[in-house]
Length: 493
Image 1 (cartoon, rainbow, N blue to C red):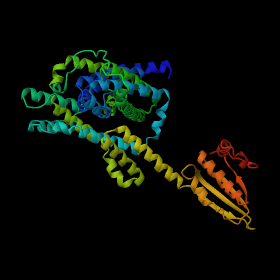
Image 2: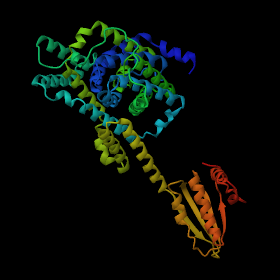
Image 3: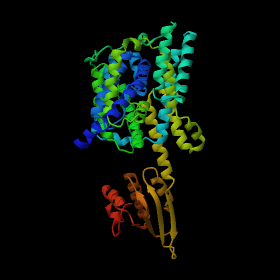
Image 4: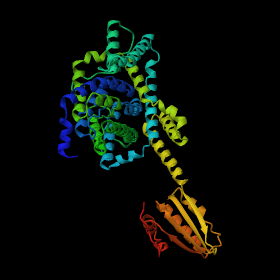
């Protein structure tokens, strides 16, 4: 990216970007507070994190117009660490997660996200929706009927208001109405201040007070790595959505390192790790926020609102947050995927279901994605393996048998090639025609060498015809270049 391109991303249509960022802030506050209590931390932690991430990612990120903050996916990973070991361990995990993300970007590993199939992505969002909903259940247990009434009213506002107007985000109206109602009519319900202290000023430098021992890192590293991977996955998925909506391209490597830098700043200023937030990002785009200034404004305006409206935010009923999070969980879940279970191929549906099941059972989004990717790779290998065809013809004088190999020869299909060769054949001359075949790995080349050796061991002459350049390269790497004597290679497809 050139300096002029970078500056253009800051200066294009500043008025529209500032206004879009301000609207995005209103949509950000309720969900960030809700995600904070889902993670088991004070609202200040998530709000400070969102402020710092928005400012930092606007400068260092690779996708203009994308809103990042303390998102639910990372909060769910962090929750177990906070509940089991305390807040300071979360700060250390956030710093390490940022470091992992920087390394991920510097090593250009963002291209690995291409191996995340559509089925895994669908399983990811479905599992995320289920986990977000399940995180609300404790807030609906052992409470008075007032809480259920407020949740029902909040859901009605969230879902019905957009049919009348979308000028102001319905979650914000939900918070205003329910908070005003509880202020006018006192009720025995939990409010945001019961969850912890709210910020009243700028964040300050906060270092984790934990023993820097091997045992500490054994505890924190798995959570840090999971937070890093989940954050990267959600950010890169969100960036892809923005790319498609704006017909532009983002710098995925820059987004990885930018998110890592942002999360390290978050860890130093008392917040929890965050990532791209797809709901707020889509809203930002809808209101015209396409540049870095909209992301910056969302963070700066967030802190301004918190300082100016501190007393009001403290009195927001938790029921309002529960209603919003139920809406988030319902909108996150891909309901069309239930219909697709019977329409899509069984292997694709299996990948999606396994991803969901692993995440729900382990509460580890990264583990679910890893299992889904692994299963996708296995199923893909199986499907490609079945495409290998080996036919043979016998010459008129019955002295030459020619095997015509078609398809991809690699570690999974190499044994099929070996099984197709009749080593008891009475023909004295064997021809292996690779014109329509492609050898991909050492396993394929090694299998080919073993076939030739076994045939020669039975006194037969063997000729390999039409190998491509890659086959020649692999055989040479194994020291079997003599197999290709007197043959002509053809270019690899």
